[in-house]
Image 1 (tube, rainbow, N blue to C red):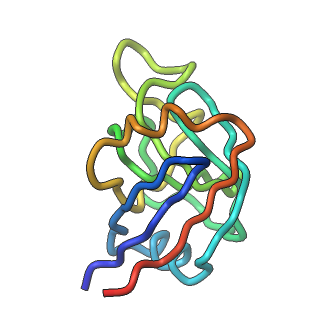
Image 2: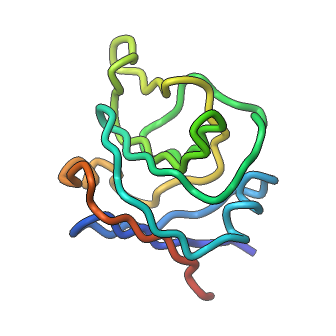
Length: 125
């Protein structure tokens, strides 16, 4: 059974699928989540009510990856290079637990402004 979520950030709405991992389980359990977008290059992140350690944490991710950043207890959406990226890679501030992936084109999130409301909800079916 795939677990699907809706992410609305400002005027942008995307859907994503969660992985079968303990990090994804913990985030699924606290939905819905509301936060304020923080932009860091082509990344949006916001604090969530989950406290986890690293789980196969990655220091380079792909466009569309959803990551949990343990130091900031943050839900991260990656759609392009960050200030610490080298070349075209997508590098978080420090390793993240990748727990899902945006379906379709994640670059639509580039129009989301710092401070925009972000709402993450579970999709049924």
